[in-house]
Length: 513
Image (cartoon, rainbow, N blue to C red; front, side, top):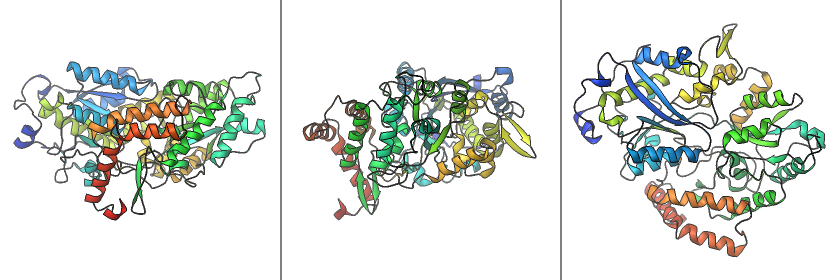
C-alpha cells in the first residue's frame, strides 16, 4: 500500500528547525533514492542477510524510494554512547538515532544534535499510522519549554521476566523460589552445590549484562521498592520511592549479601549482553532475566546440554509485596532526527514517511514476519515463525520498537510462540506486569538533563560499589551517600523539581509535600 505523500513543513517549521530552503539535486532529486542513515544499538549480535537477499531494505527502497543504511552497534551500551558522542563531536552525524532509553534521548537533546519536532508532528497533522501518539506521550519527552525532539514509539505489553534452570532445582531437591529469601537460598545453592554435577566450582546463581539498575534487576528491585526501578513514583497521592529511600537501601543490602555469599556472578558489572548470554548457554548460570521469551538462548543451551530445562519464574514477593511493578511509561523508546538530516526538509519528510510506513500494515507485517520460507511458514492459513537467529535482524531494522509491542494481538503471539507451553509462558509474562510507573515515564515530571545525567552516573557507580561491598551500607556510609547524592550531584534539586512539577500538574497536593 502506497502512502499519501505528506506535506509536513511550513515556512515557520523550516525556520524553527534551521533547515535549508533549497531542495534540488543530490539525494533530494526526484528519481534518486533518499539516503537515510540510522545509528542503532542492540543488546546482542545479529546475523544480517546478504544484501541481495535483504527483503526489508529492498522493499523499503522499492516502496518508499529510500536507501536505508544502518550503523549498528552491539555489546556494552556505554561503548555505543562513547562512539555516538565522538560522531557528534566530529560533526559526522547519522540522520536518525534510535534511542532505546530516555536517558540517551535527553542527553542528545541537551547537547543539541537532535532537533525539535513540534512543527513536524503534532496533534493536528499526525499521519494515520502514528495516531497512537498522544499529548501525554509528547509531554513526557518534552523539555521545560515544551519542545519535544523525538518521534515516540507506541507502547505495548511489557515482556520482562526471570527464568530458572528447573533441572538444577530437581538435581538439588529444591522448589522454585516464590520470595526474595527463597531466591537468595536457591541462588546460593546453584553457586555452591554443583548443580550440573561436573565436580567443578563453575556455576553462579544469577548474572547480568553490566548495567546495575537495568532490566536484569527490575524484578528484584520491584520486590523491594514497589517499582522496577529506584525512581520515584506516585501512590495514594504521595511521592514515594527514590534512590535514597530506605527500601532501596534494603535492596542493596540484599544484593550485597548475595555477592558476599558467592551467589552472584562476580563479573556481572563488567559483562555485556553477549557475555551474559554466553555464560547462560554454556551452563554457568542458574537464574537470569530475559526481555521476551528466551527461545534462542534455550535452543543454544540445549545444543550444549540436551538435558537442560528452563522454566519461567513468576514475580517474587518481597518487602514491597508480591507482583512485578514494571515502569509503565508514556514513552519507552524514541527516534531522534539529527541536525544533519534537518538541513534537508525532503529527508525529514522521508524519515516521517518511513516511520509511518513501518507502523502501517505492510511495514508492520514485513518487520514482524520477514520473508516466507526464510523467516516464517504458513500452516493452515496461520503464520508460524521459523526458529533461529535469522529472524533477529528484523527487530534491528524496526524503528517502531520490538515485537513485544504487538503481542497483545493473539495472532502475533501465536506466530512467535506456537508451542503451547511457550505461549502460556508469554501470557504469564505479560500478565505479571504491574501498573505503577515512575513520575518521569508517565510524563508527570520532567527530568532536567543538566542535573540528571551526572546524577545517574553517580547512582550507577554507587550501586556497583554497594553491591560489591566496596562502599559501606552502615548508617555512616549511607548518610555519606545521601549527602553526596542530594548535594554535590544535585539529587535534592531534582526531587524539588519533581515536587514542583507534580504540584503544577495537580498530581500532588501542597500538604502532601
